Amino acid sequence: MSTDRIRNFCIIAHIDHGKSTLADRLLDLTDAVPERERVDQILDTMELERERGITIKAQAVRLLYNRPDGVWTLNLIDTPGHVDFTYEVSRAIAACEGALLVVDASQGIQAQTLANLYLAMEHDLEIIPVLNKIDLPVADVPAATEELVELLGVGPEEVLKISAKTGEGVREVLDAIVERIPPPKSARRQTRALVFDSNYDPYRGVIALARVFDGGLEKGDRVRAMGSEEEFEILEVGCYSPKPNALPALQTGQVGYIVAGLKDIGALRVGDTITGVEDPAPDPLPGYARVLPTVFCGLYPTEGDDFERLRDALAKLQLNDASLFFEPENSRLGFGFRCGFLGLLHMEIVQERLEREFGLDLIATSPSVKYQVVVDGEVREVTNPSDLPERYDEIREPVVRATIICPREHVGAVMGLCHEKRGVSVGMEYISPLRVQLTYDLPLAEVITDFFDQLKSRTRGYASYDYEPAGYQPADLVKVEVLVAGEPVDSLSIIVHRDKAYQRGRALVEKLKELIPRQQFEVPVQAAVGKRVIARETVRAYRKDVTAKCYGGDITRKRKLLEKQKAGKRRMKQVGRVEIPQEAFLAAIRI
Ligand code: GTP
Image (tube, protein in one colour):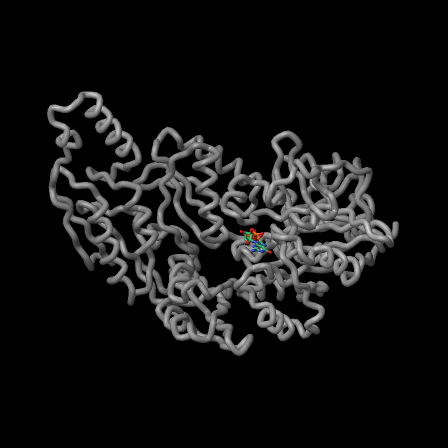
């Protein structure tokens, strides 16, 4: 079957530059969704995504574009924009021949614009530069066009200028897709399909989104996932337009879904290649890599009885998120789980989904990274600060290479911040007369605390950043322990650079002093490195009578206050004899 009339493309952009809005307009123009069913950002299906306005999971939609020269099949593959989900972006990119590079005309090129562009260039995609939001009064179309011309080496006339909001120029985008992006090509006879998204459906099992590079897939075919070596029968194939639509087959060059009926999403992960069992391809498509979590924290239910419910909820989320890691853990907080995430945003999303979709009330410990600890020549991995052995020969921490783009006048502030965060400068370059790209190697542990917030506030929101892992390096790190009433609170331990131990310990105890409610006795709060106490505060004794103010008042009012106090206490955790409220744990994260 000819692939001449197929175009596979994705939209890549920095966060908030208008990727989802443009996707909506493309759907409108190809009449994919009847007028009355239209909602904003139709591709962001998860409730949470819609609320936060971010795209978490990649999706694919088949659009039929009618032109005087006939009907064209355009497969739009949506990609997540956030740095935590880079691996999914790269798989989605690998499934396409071309990409729309969307840039907000009021902001110009940003860090994730570059990161995504480089991924697309690595896969030799045809890049169509699209300047969006030209309707905004603050849009600087000539300056942004100039940046794209410089970056891509294209003529200014090749940069499309649109408003995804008003629809201006969007038809030209469809024409450019047809005219500039090459049709898919196949090199082999044996079937090979790249899985670029994988979801679990409670009724139908694993449903994968795949791009067929060679051969074809049909209902009833016996196939094998070459990475996981799992064999299964295809129960159904089809495409989203955008509703699921069963098809007899997915041919070479096409994109669609595969119902595999598998019970474990790990058996058909993003990046795997599907081939036939009978006439298998000799080698898989490039790029099967397991994504490993980089940020870890402990999650504990506030109600001890919820432990099993938390386990079920995590297992359910994992069905749809092969990158989520968890294992049971036991600490002073009771029974909970040590969980691993791709990054801070991933962690927040998982926590929020657990609370919202599963109605769980959770306490999260400070996030940490995975350290390598060398003990007697043997390398151990430590993700929980309380597991750090007392003696070790060396400790190594993960490092990332960060790219930061900011206006020239903020370079000093950015360099100052990177320096404070123990960064090492790798390079600096002007991307336009007014804007600079800085490259730094930074410890991941410093990046996951408040780096991004600081960067935003010190540059008044004008800087953007992106990072990629850059291995491990030895560092002078120590464990700071917190003692409340003489008892160590293991969930509050942190691993920090020796130079920052005092400052972090001081900040921790000061914050805890404010947040631990007064008890009927005096409570010392201390921070210690090894046996040495480096900071101390005292919570004075006090007994709180919440009904004191309504002496002689209405009994129902008193009862209400007592109820309120009771509800507040429910969220507290008993540590030794002292109750530590959740805010104290959360504060430890933010310091
Ligand atoms: P992520 O999915 O989080 O990566 O964001 P996105 O790139 O998909 O951005 P989205 O489409 O959600 O747009 C971000 C914001 O910009 C929304 O508030 C849109 O309404 C707005 N926006 C998008 N396109 C335009 C445009 O052409 N003009 C104007 N004025 N606003 C736009």
